[in-house]
Each structure stands twice: as structure tokens, then as C-alpha cells.
Amino acid sequence: MKTAAEALIEFLAAQGIDRAFCVPGESYIALLDALHAHPRMDLVTCRSEGGAGFMAVADGKMTGKPGVVLVSRGPGACNASIAVHTAEQDAVPLILLIGQVEKRDLRRNAFQEIDYARMFGGVAKWVGEATSADQVPELIARAYAMAMQGVHQGIAAVYSLRSKSFSSSVITTGCGGSGLGRRGEGRQRHGCCRPINLAVNGLRQP
Image (tube, rainbow, N blue to C red):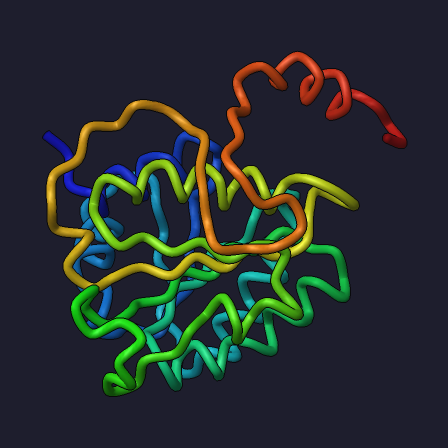
């Protein structure tokens, strides 16, 4: 059975994403392990979260698929926020994966804890948060869908994760999602929209 981290990386790879940018951190070590073990994913290690974010934005511009950047909680997320703003301003699909404190410490002023829904609510297209391993596959699918929707394949999606959620085993059941974000909140299934998506993607000037 796959771990939540493995399911997340396999989903991104299945969408044709083959590169991610990061500043390594302890809050998502299991995700780094899954990236290292995946045969088709290239992980680019950077010196600063802002630089990693801008590289992911550039990758999104060149490929037309969401650029992916991984950062630690607190200062890491703050440093990467300029890339989220840039993605919104330039209409570039971007997925920012952020480590988070344990569920038991949420909203208790824990060390380096930030409420990402409030922090990124003004610049991110959507903010999702996983508090258990079972939520990870569904929320990454929703994050990808939100990043690819709208003007020029979407704006930016921020996705925050608890540190221990990654190592737990999950059963992958498909896409859909729920989250904390704005601009189109609520549960949504995307399988029924696939014919429409294919038709729109085939247009030269949708």
C-alpha cells in the first residue's frame, strides 16, 4: 500500500509533471524521500525559498503545467509567498507545498505555525489543508485542478500538509476535493468535466 507522500508524487507524475523545486526541511521529509525514489521526478534543491518559487513559476510558464515548489512551515512559506503573488499576477499555474505543525498543535500558537488560509487568502487561488493521510490524494488532485482552471490555465494553488501525514498509508480512490480556500469553495468532482476540458484544451484561443 502506498504512503500519502508516494500517492502525492505519483499523482503529479501522472499529470506529466517531472520536476519540483525545494529548500529541504524536516516538516516534509517523507515527501522528499518519495521524490528521491520516483524514477521520473527531478528534484532541484535551492538555497532560498524565493528562488525556488521563482524557478517553479518559470517552469510553469515554459511547460504550461503547474510549477511545483516545496518549503517548510513558517519562514519557508513566508519567503515563498512572493512567488505565489507573482504566479497570480502573471496568471501562471503554481502549486506550493508547505510543511505544517502536528494536528494537535494547530491554532495553538505553536512554533512556526501559520494559518495559511488567512495568510495566502488574498493572493492564492485556493488553499487546501490536509490533517490526515487519507486527505492527501484528494487535496492534491483538487490543488492541481484549481491551478489549471481559469485564465491561462489557472493562477496559483497553495497546499499545506501536516508533517506526519505523509508517512501513513492511504488508499487512492481518484480525484475530487475539499479545502479551505476561496473562489469556488466546496466539494467537486472533475471526471464529468473531462470531455469539456479536452475540447477547451484543443482550442487555439479558448
